Amino acid sequence: MPLNRRTLLGVTLSLALTLTPPITAFAASPAPAKGEHGMVVTEQHLATEVGVDVLKKGGNAVDAAVAVGYALAVVYPEAGNIGGGGFMTIRLKDGRTTFLDFRERAPLAATRTMYLDKDGKPIKGASLDGYLAVGVPGSVAGFEMAREKYGTLSRQDLMAPAIAYAKGGFVLNQGDAASFANSAARLGKDPAAAAIFLKEDRKPYGIGETLVQPDLAASLSAISQKGPDAFYKGAIADAIVKASGVKGGILAKGDFEQYAVRELKPVTCSYRGYEIISSPPPSSGGVIICEILNVLEGYPLSYLGSGSAETVHVMVEAMRHAYVDRNSALGDPDFIDNPVSKLLDKGYAKEIREKIDPFRAGISKELMPKGFGESKETTHYSIIDRDGNAVAVTYTLNGPYGAGVVADGTGILLNNEMDDFTQKPGVPNLYGLVQGEANAIQPKKTPLSSMSPTILTRDGKPFMVIGSPGGSRIITITLEAIVNVIDFGMDIQEAIDAPRIHHQWLPDTVYVEPFGLSPDTEKLLAGMGYHLDLSDETWGRAAGILVGGKSLAEIEKGGGARYNGAMDSRAAAGEALGY
Ligand code: DON
Image 1 (cartoon, rainbow, N blue to C red):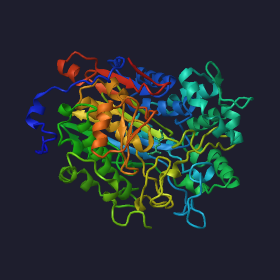
Image 2 (image 1 turned 90 degrees about the vertical axis):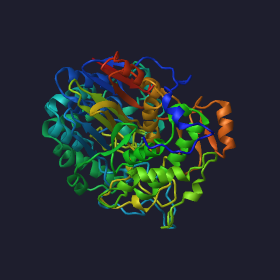
Image 3 (image 1 turned 135 degrees about the vertical axis):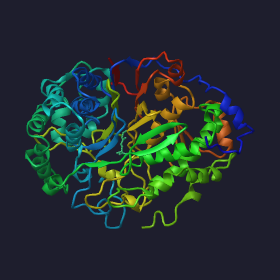
Image 4 (image 1 turned 60 degrees about the horizontal axis):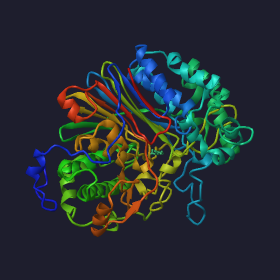
């Protein structure tokens, strides 16, 4: 194991390697869900059941992922979608891996300055609200490619539960109602969206009430019968293009006709003997998770302890350096030459470690790349089947309910993914990300993402499936779940529930979830030069599966359930269910 020979506050690394990971006081969570034949973890309980039913009927993990994707579009419209896009990481039982990129593309009429006024200043809301914010959706094409290439069941079988929930409606529980509670103002601005998601009194649906979506049922039925052409070449595309034209958008029929899913090789790296399989560009997720893990591999995290000032220090510094690379160097691989092999190189990680002062916070401004700046809603689900096929999907409308618009008659909420592009180098986006030229807007280009559907293996066998929503924080959420399991010995539920920290280079601030750090740790970090933002909000909703036991300790004892599922306690409507 390549370890940094420098010691941190006098800790000797040889000692560190002999100790078992300490469990921290704040990692207390309910037991993970158990299953012997399969496990589905999603952000909405009905969608989870849809996935388990597909597995029980003999479908594989990809079949379940497709059925869940369509079901979430109905029962979790905040983020589940057919009007957005996303990524699917697949590891098959024979060890083959692949990655489907069905993220949105910029319309053909998009220009690099389309969100700037005549003085070159960003127009408030232009990349977030209404039709100008919409990227060409990819979910339908993505699910169909996944099903055709890697699934076993018919499209009709996999779409039937979603159609039934759209047509017959579903009753909202407390978690579902919470997801709608803050949406009234946004959805009320678009008459077609308001007609679906708001009641006659213009209030959102509450606990015990039934949401029926007949237009969405009709759109889904057309796709089920005729395939993706019903979406990309038929009446659905026509309706969206028409509404876009009338309401200030630039979507054209050609955008839909030319949409194509990309099948890419996942990014892979190793961390303390585990293999990480994750998202390649146009996501920054896999590359940046690997870059951070490569840096952390040189520190004895399990000895330094979860939540200690030293651990937070090295994690934040690794994040700071990696997010500089994310925000300045990465973009759509069809347009940009991404320096992936450099960023994944263990030697590069060593160079970064050498720049980290063991006693002081780094300074983000000093890492500004030469020339830089010159020129919340997503959902993740994790599935594994009886044969060990593992699937991780993160897909999104970007902000909650996307652009907040529905083309008349379609029932389909459209994304505001265009905001993920650099509007203007140096100007922060929805997630405060300050990005550069590599992610500038161009026709047919895909905006850089942070979505990180990730699968880990050990000794050639599936070990963990993990991912989360959370905008730019997806990367650190996923990373921390991995480190919590591998370095800190938490079980999968504890690893996901544990309070999080986040740093993304700019702003030069360490974000800390409530109760994340003790007051004396905060003092130590402030003394090292850190600016802490002690948030009163939580972020992310990770969905994870661990294979062979709920934690490393249980796996080593050999006494655990085969599949252990955990839905983030932050996700009020979610569920992990095994069978
Ligand atoms: O692709 C991305 O990185 C973002 N559009 C993800 C948005 C997201 O996670 C919002 N959810 N909280």
